[in-house]
Image (tube, rainbow, N blue to C red; front, side):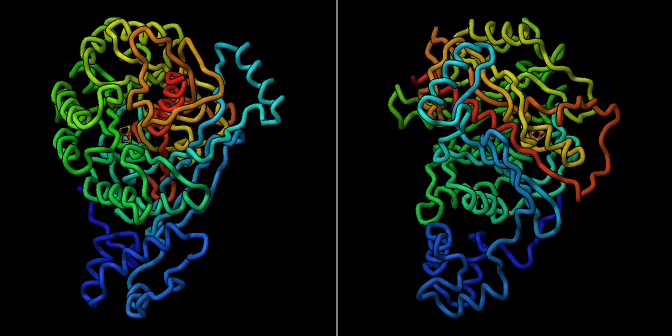
Length: 485
Ligand code: SF4
């Protein structure tokens, strides 16, 4: 149990704290709502609450005394050369650091179909567009962190080696979106950065509400997704508290013994209970949606050579997921700084694994690593920031999905993917984008996994990664678009 953090000054985006303080001074709650609306929706003109017209003087005084416009600050920004991602390194009030990553969707390179890639490049060049441009900025997705470190201890994840250092406040989570919107308009948010979102439930839920509030960020709940290793009571609580958001499950193994090897905290909840909770969540969501728009749980599966990549395991996974409303995202593992000698599966092995699961009529995507120049790739962040990383080891700019069919130049959003964008039986699947797969290499240098367990985290070097999950989502989007086309 980590200590509750008390910020001073407090975040102006922390709804409960602001409303409580306003009430104590007799200031109407409507003034707080006006303040958020002006600061968020009119940020081009209103950059500080003291510029808000007809805003009570008592409110300005109170905010000056107790609150800050932002309690965190962006201390560096890294843009991928191809424009696909922007990584923001954010320092919290107490000096701890997290990262948020903006991901964009655009041209997807399919390295297993070089002739298609070349033709697409030539066509874009003829049209006067950048050959490899990520042009669709209006569809940007932000991957946010919910904690500093993580208690889940997934063995393939460097963040897991840190342990849990802090829970972020709702305000600190929301501030990540506020900062990102200054770079460009964010349309989707994924909780796939550092931390297990459902382990910081109250703050995550409060931030989701703020993001979906039409008088604040106004995101569609379907464009907000939470990734979890499977905290059963919280999945069931989400069904009532945030019934319309997207849900992703980091599964990584189809059987309980194997899963406990990869996700140590899995012993708390049996895999069957987790899947049952996911079924309940998605059935509840789909009750209100027409059948052809039915949504899916995104199931993440980091494929580790000789650990969870056997054909037998693929059959077990196929049997487990068969008939469920899921979209399986298989992510070949890429080495990062964890104390295990995990290896990347062969491309053939990964394909065979995915094909075997597909044999059970499970919608399955396979990501394939591409080169990435952005350190926002999961694992790269660890390396670049001193051995610490962010989440899910899933998506990472730098890899693509593998499939058999591609529709030119279009990418899809996660919500599309999870809402009827999944491949129907027999539909050739895609290819598409990046994964946390590039961990293990930085600037072309191979990184050898540290054979000793990580201990003693240096807070100054804490940096989060993030992306994994997000990327997974991105992948999904790309895939979906292809599928839809
Ligand atoms: S993969 Fe996600 S849940 Fe697992 S240890 Fe890493 S940050 Fe935590």
